[in-house]
Length: 297
Length: 182
Image 1 (cartoon, rainbow over the protein chains, first blue to last red):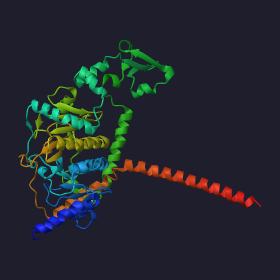
Image 2 (image 1 turned 90 degrees about the vertical axis):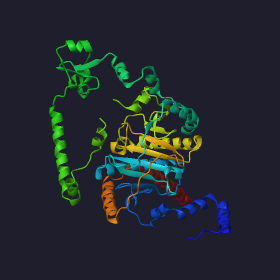
Image 3 (image 1 turned 60 degrees about the horizontal axis):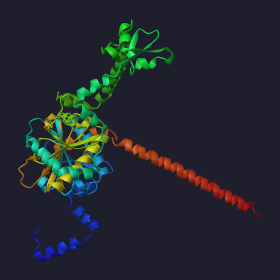
Image 4 (image 1 turned 135 degrees about the horizontal axis):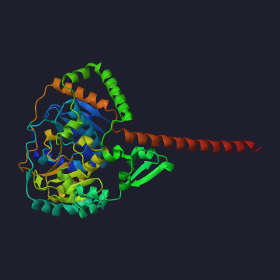
């Protein structure tokens, strides 16, 4: 395209100035590649689509399976996106990320949003990047570093007022008062246990239970006997698993486990018939979410 | 359990708490990419994003958006990055799901970018097929809301039908009474 002359430029600028916001938005839409992808004028590799958003594969990806999640309506940056749309996008992002972890057997995903050219935004359409990650892949090389506690204090002083105004002011949280009095979760738990423990048993039963134990709840009211901790320990009754914490294989539990196994066996048989899942098995199965979460421990 | 973000809540950390409600916490850590970075995370402990319930994730994102707006105004940032590092492979350091809001400026030297790769159309096709098939298997994961909406619509319809019926009845009654008048 030839460089526009100054006259042309002035004309355009005036045109844009005189436009109504709706017309401006229309112009932006016409200029936006992603709006054309959404309307289907430009073809793309769609991965997911619903009434308000579209997920496509990036044609110049950071890694194999790099997905762009776009709202169908045109927004340039995140602050313009309504809360409802943003909430919907985040739920879709979560589910798509889950599939990335499972199918591409990634070690993690990076969910990335860039607002403004300074942040690395390249297209004038708000989008969420979902990037499959592997340890040591060298993407996004910036590292977090220690900057000192004074900085945090300064940042707090600068932002707090504005942030609270946006978030609707300070909220009273019950948990906070408890935590201030006794910092730490560990101290909170014994505080609860200090309440006198009460055990429940039936008049003729050989075991005693905690109040919340399902066995205790099965005891009919007229047979219910409540015992203090000492009474329970001194009586001839034995503690239930809910008290002792030991796992005694129960007939019911064993049965339940068996039926579950059977079900999973049945479930595994049917998809094995189609070739797609068979190829998955060849690749050595899928990474489960729990595995990824447990890596931290 | 050792978790830096749970420690922030417990008041054991050097980090500064900016905002908290029943579900969402906004805080400034002392280990950051750049000055002015703010972290949004759920009160409840979740390790990775996939474990976080829809409601909480929605609230976190909305809080992150508002934080980003505040950062734009207060620091006169030229841009912001919203980053979720999900899993060890993505560089997640603290085993607690969090959304980082990073203020950006032209030439701040922060490299949060990647080297775009060239991929063949075939490769794209294959991944698109695999991913879309698996996502389709999830079914309609936004369904609960839609179901509610649908039932509301049904109820409305029923009410409308009832109303229209009662109107018809009235009309009929009037017509009948008219007919009765000799």
